[in-house]
Length: 341
Image (cartoon, rainbow, N blue to C red; front, side):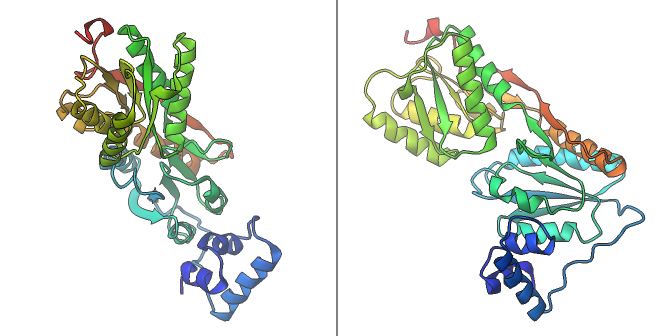
């Protein structure tokens, strides 16, 4: 019998069962007693936690999926991060076990990590939900989170500098002469997009640019969703669009680009667009998409290096490491002076 089955019988979530097993806070006494009663009744035995005298040499990489829209569809990002993780783990003498976990399966994955054969964990936290932080705290081995800072927590994390990247994009558009810069904002709120939103607004304010509420378009972060949402907005919109847009990610930018072209706008003559992530599709788009490049392999390597530090020389301290970005200008951007000619 596994944690999910125990949770179903007790009428609680798998996360609650895991908290009880690890004697963590966040569970009422009555619920705690009910869970223990079910555990005893069904003879559940949690994975053994060995007092290991030597390390196993195994690191687990857990790709966490919640909404699924980003992790499942952004294979290029995950592949590049994984390449950095695999290379660094091999160079540092560690074996790597790659696992995938949904919200429902995460408690079981954490129990497996605590079972004695794992030295440390790297968690892909792009879609990690804040309400599961208490569950993550039940880990009994070092953990480094990639692609989510988990702000205000004591977890090591390696993240891209989202705010800086967004600021760079807005500044580049301003340097091209654009003074009215819109925002293609993800309708899905995750940590990365929240930080990019902060960078966009900071840049607009610092550069003395006026923000018009109607120039912020909320689009789904998928190619089909962004295209459909942008098309619907364009069909009912009155007045001119901004001469330039920054998009929360490349997928949104590419979907919106397609919708703009279908509505008769020329890219970049009428509208300049800058995305974020530098996915492979940017280079084959028509026109090729300007974007903010993320050092994905570097993020994976830094995560392994930090994890190994915590495994070999634990200090009790934590680090939030920001990995910088760079701007790549391609055919989707042009100086404002050449637009609408």
